[in-house]
Length: 114
Image 1 (cartoon, rainbow, N blue to C red):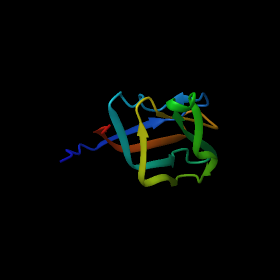
Image 2 (image 1 turned 90 degrees about the vertical axis):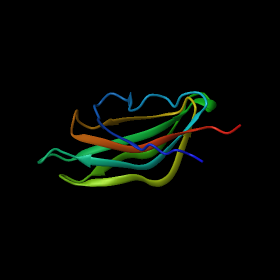
Image 3 (image 1 turned 135 degrees about the horizontal axis):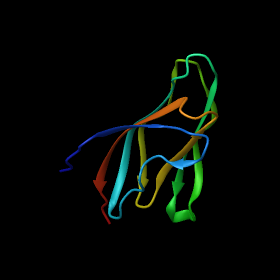
């Protein structure tokens, strides 16, 4: 039986592409229940990019959102349900302006089965 301890964390994006969470540890799989992107600036438009980095494929980046417009004072889902990363993988992101966009992750880690 899997013991599921869900974690929630928010990360403010900057204009510099940055790892948003630590890489999935060896021996684990990280399951995401939700990745939510919110725009906090009350006046200016903002664009957000969230990629996942595939450690097994030379750290290739694959977009979940790519320069997607996030409406002022609104939010968009990047992932809802069924998305998992393997050991060494991690999400990475940036925005069109510093601290205008917050990404919230709801996830849990499970021991990988060989």
